[in-house]
Length: 205
Ligand code: HEC
Image 1 (cartoon, protein in one colour):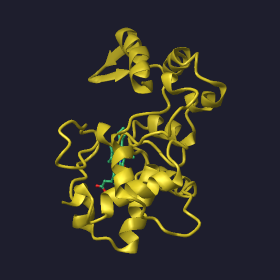
Image 2 (tube, helix red, strand yellow):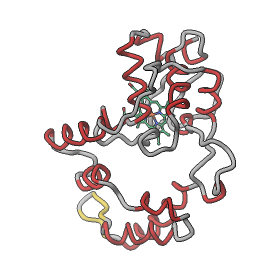
Image 3 (tube, helix red, strand yellow):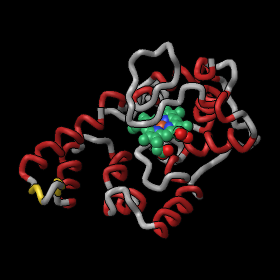
Image 4 (cartoon, rainbow, N blue to C red):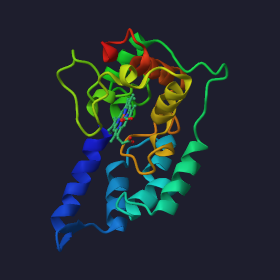
């Protein structure tokens, strides 16, 4: 429930922040202090996640609107953080992918120490199949994704990279860096690629 905890911390800040013109401004130092305070109980190996890395700092510092040069620099830096399977096969099992897309398990205080593999929580932001009635709309609908793009090796690689590290293509994406941040493994990423690309997957019905 990390996002909710952060939201609670930040809403207290918004209440005391200043409204300049039509834009709400928050002192970044206060925001970071509030996040740290909210995650006081976080295990030691999570502490580094509370400090924004270069990419997050640059995206936040420009309100997610980096200059063209910054965009390219971020994109390149993040592309270098994509790891690929040794055998070069990027398509896994869409059935496992669908279970991962449904699962929001992982990275919450109640999930520590981990008892299950992390999920991808893709439905929190995306529509993926016609069968699921409850999904978020922060990200675009991915219904018919493979059908629309075809399953050429280039298209498959693009999806793999998108899931592993969305900042490698879209510098200030709001989508988490699942592979780079070790939320999902290479195998899990392959299963999600299959969910989006496999013609037999409910995404492409
Ligand atoms: C917190 C919200 C969020 C979550 C969770 C999320 N995404 Fe995304 N996703 C986005 C946003 C926002 C975009 C559009 C910006 C971009 O392309 O980076 C996007 C874009 C994408 C795209 C590219 C869409 C296109 O038009 O080419 C793919 C593919 C994708 N997501 C797959 C996934 C998968 C698979 C998961 C689960 C592992 C997932 N997303 C989880 C927010 C999210």
